Image (cartoon, rainbow, N blue to C red):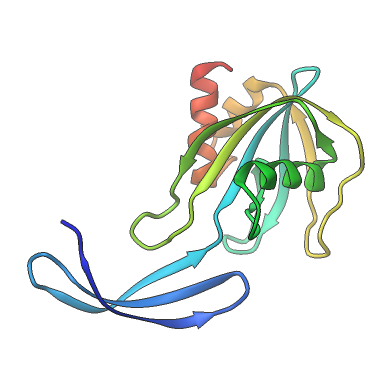
Length: 177
């Protein structure tokens, strides 16, 4: 079942991603000389629950789909960081919340056929606000504190649209954590 890599070159490189053009041979002998793979950093999602039981959601514009989206706190795993370190950093930067008890809640692949990235999801229970947001110049994030039932409603009416956020949130709702 495994494909044989015959040649690989980069078609596009920038600081956030690289597009690799692979020449592969399938077990059947079929060769494809233009199989593209998008290489990006792994990223993290945080299902964060405050000390008083509220769930932290974010609202921000996403230019790829040209919509304002409801999301989990999230971001890239920087080089030299573990996914847990990245999750804690992103939660603090984007929301001002930190602390609590953290545990992993799955790894999700957004596109196994054409991307290398994995999304690592964590649950953080009992977080507390210790500062204001520390956003990058390009970020404009509004914070919402909601009940778990609100998350279910947002999922049911497709207000949370990103699949690698939907999957762990549906699991979170199903397990009533």
